[in-house]
Length: 289
Image (cartoon, rainbow, N blue to C red; front, side, top):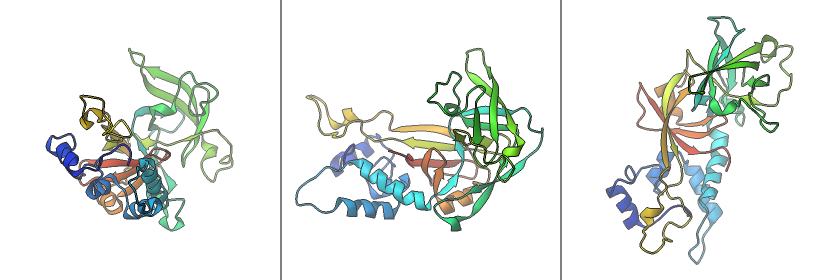
């Protein structure tokens, strides 16, 4: 496959010299690595059947394996909301201390997966990338004097922002329309974007490991003179960050379900490193190529 190596000698070198964290590192092209990354048996089998058998060596684009993973996980992964790069959003006209339970769909591809409830409050986390202070016409998400829908909740409109001494946005202030909740008179009012969120008072902090391809070039063995395949390692193949996730996502639930779609972000897998005090998720693949 592209962006990887299959030589056992070279894979052993990666392990022994600690370029990866063992044979089951989610960046490794091993069965235990793919499993820990979150690839399902069905997705791997479908990949193998799609590639087929040839009489000569062939290089397969790793994006085909990623496509097979998306196709399978879209049907089976339970949806949840998580915010990876948070900025605080405050709904100024929402009642202080009020908490509502919003109904969310577990998997729109599987009606039998049912629904869940998510707490909604005055202060929320949203993705920093979902707000832009000086937005152009091609940016449809939140900006000053612009409306968006909070998924499963209300339509909000940004009124102003608060920045720190360095010019970084620390708070986004909005108002909400109480008639736009699902089932209310104005719930069908159209806006151009829907964003996800997590309640500041109720969400849990989790560790998220964002994996990219182990090598930065398609053919790592194709090296310049004097270089080795190690010179083609991707320095950003693993980024560890924190996220805020739904409070119902307990250790027991995470390890029982294992495969999740963080809505609008990608597919993630509950890592065995998870503990009661800290859930750990590995990014399997993005929602789109």
